[in-house]
Amino acid sequence: MQELQITMLGPSGVGKTTLLTAMYEQFEKNIGFTNLQLTPDEDSSAILQDRLVELKSLLDVFEARGRVGVQGTEAIAGPESLRSFKFGLGKKGEKPSLQLNFRDYPGGYHQATATPEEKSFVKDVLKQSVAVLIAIDASALMEENGKYHEKVNRPQQMKDLFNAAYQDLDSPRLIIFAPVKCEKYLRDEKTASELLERVRCGYANLVGHFSSEKLSPWIVSVITPVQTVGSVIMTRIEPDATGAPHFYFRKTRHDAEYSPKDSEQPLRYLLRFLLKLHLDQRNWGFFNFVRDWLGFDSHLKKAVDEFARGCKTTNGFAILKGDKWLNI
Amino acid sequence: MTIYVQSRGKSQDHDYRWLEIGKESQSPSIPPLLKDLKVEELIESQKPSLILARSGKYLLLLVTAMDSREERTDFIGRRVRNSVAWVAIETPEIEQLFRAIAVLALQGELAAKIDQAINIGGNYGFEVDLKQLQTLVDRSAAGVKPASSLKYGKNDVHLRAQLASELSQYSLPSDLGTDQILVVVTTLKSQEALERLRVWRGLSSRIESETWIEVVDSIISGAESGLQKKTLFLGILAAIAVIAMGWIVWSSALSPTPQNSQSDRKASSHPSSVTSTTLQKSSTVSIK
Image 1 (cartoon, rainbow over the protein chains, first blue to last red):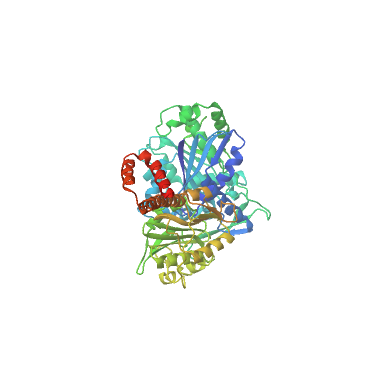
Image 2: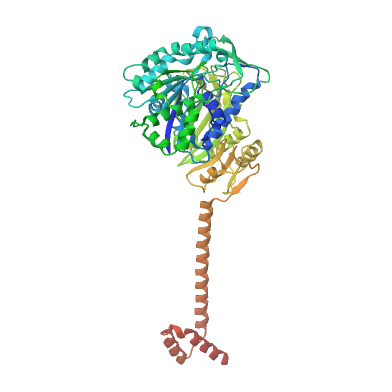
C-alpha cells in the first residue's frame, strides 16, 4: 500500500497533538457522508481515543487556565521511537488503498537545547512529507495586537526549518496554516477576516520565502482555522513572573460539550491536492503513484472528488498560494 | 546501576528529556536499552506504564508517566509527568531491588517518592536528587521460584495489586531466555500481542478479562515435552537392557549339557531358531 506522510509542525504547546486529536474525532463523522472510509490502525486508534477522552475532560471545569489541549508529547526512546499515526484511506467496505501517516513530535525538537539528532529528525520529516500542518496558537496571534505571537508561535523558527528542509524541491507540497484555539475569532466575519490577516502578517517571512523563485512553483499554501474544542472561548491573559502569558478559556455555556469544528478541513485540502495531481497526469516522482491510485477506480475517484469539494474558502479560510494545484 | 529520569521544566524551552543521573552530573542521555527493546511498541509512554525486561546480562525497569505534584506544570499549565529507568547488570540483589520498586509502582506508591526527588531548576528545567532515588526501597527479599506459565489480564487496580503481591513473593523467571520482556503494564497492547512476545506477566487496558488468563508458553512447554520424550526413550532402553540382562543371567543359571551347548552354538548361528531352541531347552528342564 502506498504511504503519504503528513507532519504536524509547531513549537511546544501550540496545539499540534490537540489538532491531530480533533482531526481524528471529525474524520469519521465527515468522511462518513461520502463513499470513503478512513480507518486508524489499532495503536493509533487506542492512543488518539485516550487523548480524545483527555481533551473532552477539559470541559469538566468551566474555566481552564491555559490548558485547552492535551499533554505535551515526548519520545520515550528518542526521535526514532516517535510513532506515526496511521490511517488507511479507501472506498467503504474495501481494503484501504492509501495510508496516511501523521507525524507528531515534541515541539522542543527545534529549540536551541535540542540535540543534533532531534533537529535532524524534524528536517527529515519535513522533507519527506507531502503536507505540513503548521499549528498556530490563535490567542497568541490575535490578543493584545499579537504581543505574544513571536514568543509562543516562533514564526522565524518555522521559516528557518523550511529553509533548511526545502532545498532543491522537485515536487509540489501542501502547507496548511492551522490556527487553533480560535473559537473566539470565528464568531463573525469581521474577526474571521482579521484572523486571516494576522496569519498573513504573522508569517510574512515564511509566506515570502514560499514565494521565492526556487520554491514558488512547488508550494501550495492554505489557511484552515480549526476550532479544536468548539465550545470554549479565550477570556483573559495573565502574564506570569517571567512574562510568559497564561491564557484563560471558559466554556460558552455551563452545559457546553466538546464539539470541534472544521477539523476535517485539512484532510479535505489534502485530498483535493492529491486529486489535482492525479488529474494533472504529469510525472512528479514523489507522487507518481497518485495517477494509478485513482485511475483504476472511478468510484473512489468520485468519492474523493465529492469530499474534496467541501473545502472552505471563506469566513477565515483562504488559499494563500498555488491555487492551480487545487483547481479540480 | 544507572538511573535515568525523564521529565520537563516549566518553560517552553525545557521540553521532556531524559537525564542520566550521576553522582557528579546530570546530563542528557536516552537509556540505550529503551531503543534496543523498542519499548514504544509495547507501551504508550505518556500513560502510566511499566516494563521489566532482561536484555543479555542487564535488567531494565521502566516506569512511565508518573504524576508530579500540583505545582509542577509546564508553561501552559499542563501537569508534568515523570518517568524513570533503572538499568543494571542482573545479580540476585538487583533482581530483588527491581522487583521491590516495581511493587511500589504497582501499588501506586512510587510516583510521590519519585516526584519528591525532582526539583525545578538546572540547565534542563529539572534536577534530580540521586540519594533519594537510591533509597526508595527499605528492604527487598529473595523470591521463591515462580511458575513459568504466562499470565495476562486487564490493567486495573485489582490485577495490579495481585501482580504486586506475586512480584513481592516470587523471583523473576530465569527460564524464558536472556532477552525477554518479563512484565508489562500497558494501555496499548492486545493479549495476542503480549503472547507473541512471550511476556511473562502482562496487564493491558485492551484486555477485558478481570481475572488472569493463563497461557502455556509453547517454547517452554515444547522444551519440557522434549525432555519428557527423551526421558521416556531412555526408560524404554533401560527396560530392554534389564530384560536382556535378566534373560542372560537366567539362561546362564541353567547348566547346559554338552549336546545342548552344541545345539546352542548352532542355534546362535540361526537367529530365527532362537525361540524354538529356548522352548526346547525349557521343556527339557521341566522334564528333568
